[in-house]
Image (cartoon, rainbow over all chains, first blue to last red; front, side, top):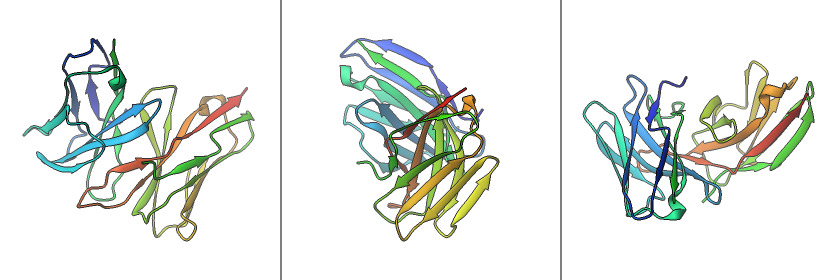
Length: 112
Length: 113
């Protein structure tokens, strides 16, 4: 158990819909990272938040957004969903620069 | 884009044998981490090696890092069926204060009992 929690574990929805994925980092970790794992693109970094503020953006679509709340949990919002958005979405947290990133169990999103 | 590239893509060995996976990357790094993923499940952190380190051990795992060749290897000794999984290397290179990881495509290891 990494200490990072994600909900829900599975999500099945239809094209055009909007979903919200939730992540709680390990106790004390200020950074939350979101990653997408798909068959064709592999594991890709989406976005990072540090203590409530956006720190870095990777290959995140404009239809996707995220935020980190004062209690440090984070949410990833995916809208206007397409079939190609079906993937595993992971969040990770770390304790600081060059520290180990610990991953949550992931949310498997299926868009039908 | 993928920073780390693992080699081989797939590896099949008998239980008890050693397994070696390699990772190459393109740009300078702060550290390199290896993760294991069982069949589409969560990523489990195995080991982190810093750019100023050359070798690191953790149980049956041995990781080496050659920054001059921009490559790393993961050796699993005395493999077990439970080691069957995909193994990923991930590099972090500080960009604008962020340490996001860039992953390779992974090596799929099968350990046959």
